[in-house]
Length: 619
Image (tube, rainbow, N blue to C red; front, side):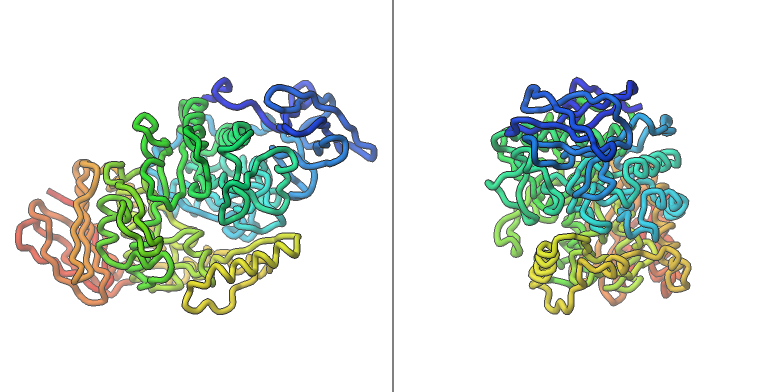
């Protein structure tokens, strides 16, 4: 089981109930003269003073209160606020905090030993739109569905308490509190427990680059924010200025709580390029070190970055001078694949569009490793070829790539099933860690739109204006759905039953075939570090060969709309086709590539238009 070393971790924050019927409170408030806790126990309530302690904290024990009781902090005798480390906000971001007894939940996942990160097949979902109920416990009823698809890791978009009942989750104001309408702390634990019982790892998306503007009371307690830096989303968190030690502790404690109190297997750190920190020992380094020292045993605890910096130091081990995160999302792979499939070249896509880009991403990871970027108008990135492929997470779509379009278009709304199958082959049979976005497995076409449920009219209008300005680079944006309207949220729900429709059944079956094939081929066990890659730009074709223990795999892609004939780079052995996107079994027009090829010099391989074929060496 996972072991938690309290001596290597920051002390608890917030309210922690004890078996003796008391609750200990601890809050950081460096500029306050006094801090008390108001217990909302009846008409009169009850106010108890906390005692100043080291590090500008106030703490104390209150008898006769425990699980389920509501409270607020009172600063300097007058101003009352929810707990910055609140574990539950049953009445929303502006309401009181609730004490949560984490020890009362009965876990039954003692046998769970986790999964090796390289074996993950990740399914990213938004809790509110994945089911009609929009709750953690409703997802429990979908675990058989995930098994059917072939998924073994579920990634939840952020679940920390945000304003209202609908939001992507990146406007969270209480990082420690699972959202009340999703099912709160108990609902999340129930989901994680059920996932582990049935063999699924759980990845949780967390946001350490900003907090949402509504319900964000942290600045009333201390200098959590700084005006020295600005993020695209508002005030930057204070990770490198005066008093930043305790700000760091706050977020490091938050990460540990997800691992310890909720048993999650991995955290996906949102947009770390929005974390501004010029310290010699950065917050991310401290986070990596503390998670590594405070948590040991099984299941392992992984940290995954989202970053557009193409900075290989992020996933370079600490002993080699890096930050030491375990893996990162690779946007370059997505952009290279997306532009070949759609022909789009606007915005950041202007740096992509050539098949050589996808070839380089297969061969090295990043596409931009120090070259000039037209979009950024400067050189961008660092070499990545020396890092294992299993440190990169790839995808053909995700919440950002759909939701940050004016109409929330999924890939299935932009291209046909022939291209979708080519994309699925590239992602699921790559040596990288594959990620699917909810619904892509059957070609969901409902949009994934940006939606909020704010209570401040000025903020609502600012969001509307900001979304319009954000899409100025699109050639024709049309009318952008109002993020505040409930209809926008409802339009974003997926319909898993539609996988049974005649037009979608073959695609769904193909995804199931690819996940099964991935588990059989185990491309993450590639020897030699990187695949052998070759492309023919004039033909729009690409070859990727992965040397594997006992069953080498070769992928051939034709991104053109014409038949292609290429000289096979396979010079030895016998190879059998194990997947062909043009197979009638998957709704294709019929295979053109041969079912078997003999690896010898001069062999010419024929590929159909928009075709991907996988071969496995037989001898």
